[in-house]
Amino acid sequence: MTTDDRGHATGPTPERRAQAEDVTDLLVARRPAGRAADWRRVLWISLLAFALWLVLDAPTLQHNAQVSPVGTRRTVSLDLVGPIAAVSRGLGLGHVVSGLNSLLGRQGNRPGNGAPLVPKRSTKPPTTTTLPLPSAAAPLRPNPHDELRVLVVGDSLGIDLGNALVPDLLATGVVQATLDGQIGTGLTRPDYYDWPTELASDLPVDSPQLVIVMMGANDGQDFIGPPDVPYGSAEWDSMYATRVGSFMTQATSTGAQVLWVGMPPMQNPVLSAKMGHLDSIVEAQAAKHPRVVFLSSATVLGTAQGQFTPYLTTPDGQEVNVREPDGTHISPGGAEILSRAVLATFPQQLHIEMPH
Image (tube, rainbow, N blue to C red):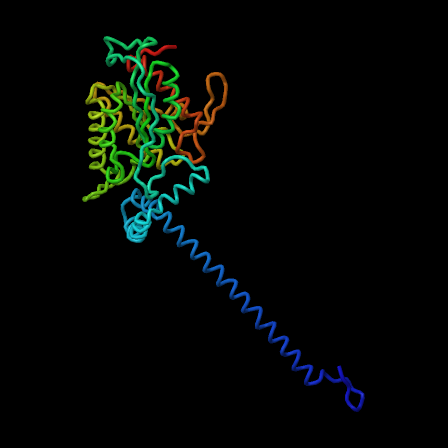
């Protein structure tokens, strides 16, 4: 601050005023430039991360589009993701995803990860003699030197059941049990995973006397043509019944019996209604095949009315969590309850006597 010749206060000198303006201009210039640079850097990093994720996960996104209902959204998704998924598979990036999943402790097969679908199999090799197929006239009565060969096949819910059922069967000491399961599969989309071909390879290898089937969770969708057949139509019901019946015929072609376990009620009411409809088709087909038994899981894992419930109370008063948080899959506790229900059919419906 300065004063004039009369003693009045005046502003800063021109030199100081210029210096202050230079400092202000410098600060104003630096702040926006720095902020803009920061935002541009964040934006580029975000775009690069998104591009990397898209390339790595493109096969999974493509699978999700493939199994979605037929329509404009599915077509656009396949057109956009298809070329990227092809590049991802060509570069072998599925192995990167699998390696990361392993490092993160994620187990199990994941469809669309760029690698071929490999069934989840667990088995006990044969040890001693086996008995002929059981029948109502000559029920199987195993002794410590006799074995029953059982093959369990299915989708992710079939794997849930198999993870409990196979150990329970092996624990009897008289069963050779094999689990062949693949998540995200069924009978609607053989272009994605061909179960009849897989079963054709299982039968001569495992020589099962009993085939236990649990699949259908992924089947409530349109048939992909040409021509496309929409779910809910009479033509769809007829096609699905034919495929189920053909699978039953194939499973019994070597003399085995079949126990087909139906889908449990789902938390999503739309999906649950679909599963109930599919079960009715399967049950009707089972009635046409003498060596096939259908076991409903609606009241085994649901309420007495066949409605969804995440918890069940056992006869001894214990409350058991029977379903996973997604409201679709079966928890270990629920799988054990369903396994016991399956074992209960052995003497009652399959005429197979098991040791107590």
